[in-house]
Amino acid sequence: MNVMYTIGCGMNMKRTQLYLTKEQLDWLKKIAKKQGTSIAEINRRAIDACISQPEKVEKNKVKPLTLGESMRQIAELAKKEKFKGPKDLASNVDKYLYHD
Image (tube, rainbow, N blue to C red):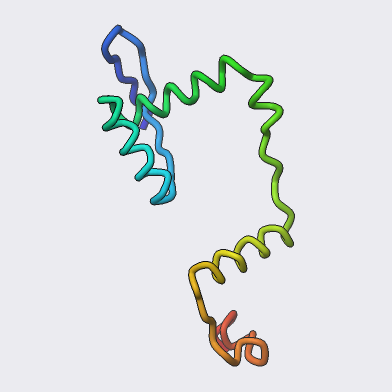
């Protein structure tokens, strides 16, 4: 579905969807309430700030993670959340991966 919205001062807007962590959304809600505006407006302002300073965006560019780095981050998150997997995981990998 391709929908255009016209708001306020006649600016055409395209609807989009954004996935955020709970922490990110909580922070956005807090800032939006404090500033008396919408979460969408906070996002637009942040994007406009990035557009107006492309050199800073390029300098802070996020590099793709390697597989090892991704696995390390998952392990750190599991440790932080105190996740405990099955005690026999190492000896029964196929059972847990393929339900054998």
